[in-house]
Amino acid sequence: MFTISQTSTWIPLYIFLILYLAFTQKKKAIFSVLVIAAFVGLADYSSVHFFKNVFLRYRPCHNLEIQKVIHLVNNHCGGQYGFISSHAANVFALATLFSFIIKKKIFVIPLLLWATVVSYSRIYLGVHYPLDILGGAIWGMFLAGIAYYLYSKLTVYFFG
Image (cartoon, rainbow, N blue to C red; front, side, top):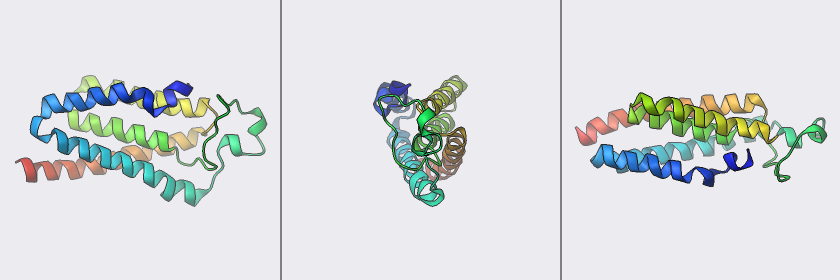
C-alpha cells in the first residue's frame, strides 16, 4: 500500500495517458494536458488551503486518542491535518477529467478503480479516515466537472 500511495509509482500511467492524448487529439493534446495539470494542481492546493487548514482535523496517526492503535507503514504519517485527502482529490480529479476528455468507456472504470485503490491506500496506511477520502474524491470530481465545462467551452473557441 505504501508503494501504491506513492505518486512516482504511477508515472508510467501518466505517461501512457499523455501519449494517448498526443496520438488521439493531436492539436488539442497540449491544451488538454495543461488543463488537466492546472486542475490537478488546483485540487492539490485547495485541498490543503480550503479544507485542511480550515477544518484542522487531525489525521488518525496524529490523533492522540487512537494513534497507538494505528498501523503505520515505514513510520510515515504526513502532515498534521487530514480532512480532506489531497491524494484522493488529486487522483479523482485526474481520473474524472481524463475520463471526460478521452470519452472512451474502456478507460472510465479502470481510471476510477485506480483512483479508488490509491485513495484506499491512504486509509490502510493510517493517514486518513474514510470521510477524508470521500471528501477528497467528491472535491476532485467536482473540480473535474468545472474543468471539463471550461475545457469544452475553450476548445470550441480555440479549435472550432
